[in-house]
Image (cartoon, rainbow, N blue to C red; front, side):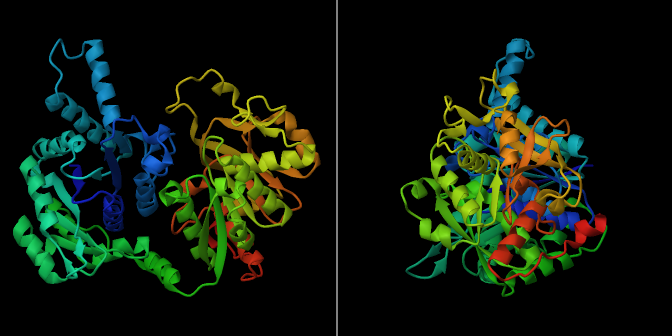
Length: 549
């Protein structure tokens, strides 16, 4: 029988439900179970693909092209499993499906209501996860906070699941926040008590409470929460904010959460958890390592969650290379005003991540020009590849009018142009070139040396591509087209031949990076950065990929 763990949040949003869900998945996977994780998002958007990064942070793209919540990035990085479209469900998707059914006459003229029609659709979507992923344990996180109006249908569906699949197959975990009163230095449990009372009024009694705080939570507070919230004392798990994200599974393991879950769901451990790799990574993270500075030139740097996967991919590569990355967050629009240049000039490497729209583009182009002229290692991701091509095109053609038709529809030199299949597309949501596509690598290039293989698959999210009519002239002046679609129609990776490391890729390699398996392009980039910073004299052997090769 499939087992379900439902995770809710209380007191405040952004309390850490996503990371808690991912860490619980890791606990169970280490015990030999196949796990999948689903996020239920209460917003009415169909998906976050059309939402501003300022509103929602990063849009995380899956293999199948689904545009999802950034928490799915946490899930994949912790449990090292590729998820699919059914793992992110929104209110918009639920209502859209139910309304479509009503229009077709599926309800035989009945009145459509939140209960049972909306809740039935939510439960149907939850039920799709084990069928499509073949997982034995499904972890379901509900976005938002208990008490939010928009979360109520999801919580009601979770309550009903207990009857549908059996109490012995369902478990409820509530993640809450303990605020600290500055005047007295006390941590307060009352908001947690009210949050649990609200949850119980809906009909859900939590089996476990994960109590989050920036300060150490003593046993007396845990006992108090257990008493007033009717939870076993050992099932109140203190989780103090830690500086190392990947340490959270170890903290939960030390608190005995893995055993509590198995006992509650009637499961027997299949294998002894092996934490050696994770402990080794954490030991490296805590060790003193030489510092390198990476300028991340973006459009949404005020909200760093907009670049969550880029930040984590840098962290993974840094652990493998043996350096510590200091990210210099530079707003590209500020560079256009002459601000931030001292920071950029102090950087050992430059990353220009993805984005959309013309705001701040000239600042990104200027950053690419600086990296090319000063021989500073550069990694361009999607839009970062586009601005690299635009900058090089202006250099080659001697004209500032070189551009992308995304930013200037009338440019006489559209080195980046709309994909032909995108010309007739009018709807914005879910219509880009999305998901996993193959890329053939050219021997002797930086890309081929980084990957140690000839064919790779990467996740895409874009409408614009390199215009092939500029292949010849750009190639004559030193641009190397090191990655192509297998049919040779699309340019996927570009490099500059007389540069130590200047590489742009049309895809988003950050989405496939893992703590114990850093993405090859990020690793290769950081190795060159470390050489530039004079903390590394040569590339570090990549034991995993070289052994496979």
